[in-house]
Length: 136
Image (tube, rainbow, N blue to C red):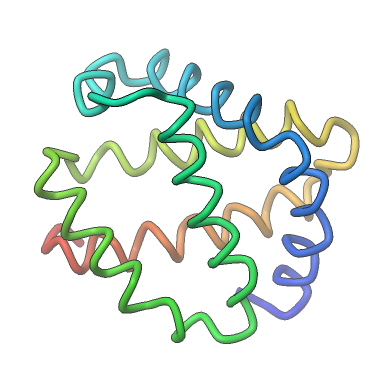
C-alpha cells in the first residue's frame, strides 16, 4: 500500500462509516450472490456480523500508516476463519463483494484510484489472514 492509497482509504472511510449498517448488508448480500456456499458460514445475525466487520475496519483504517501494528490481530482472525471453514478461494469473493458494496456506498467518489486503494488494503488483509491460516 502506498501512502497515497492509504490517504484515499482514510479519506473515503468516514462516508463509509456513516452508512455502516446498510453497507454491511449490501456486502453480505453480494457475497452470498457470488458464493452461495458462504452463507453456511454465518450462524448469527448479519447486523451483528456487520458491526464486527466495521469494528475491524475501524481498527484497520486507524492503523494504515503502521500496518504491522494490526498484523497479529489479522493473523488471529485468519486462523479463526479457517476454523469456521472459510476456504482460500472465498477470500477473492470477499474482496470483490466488498469493493462492489463500497462502490454502491460512495457512488461517483469511488473512482479508479480509490477503488485501487481499497483493493490494495483488502488484498493486504486477505494475504495476512490466508498466510496465518496456512492457505497462502
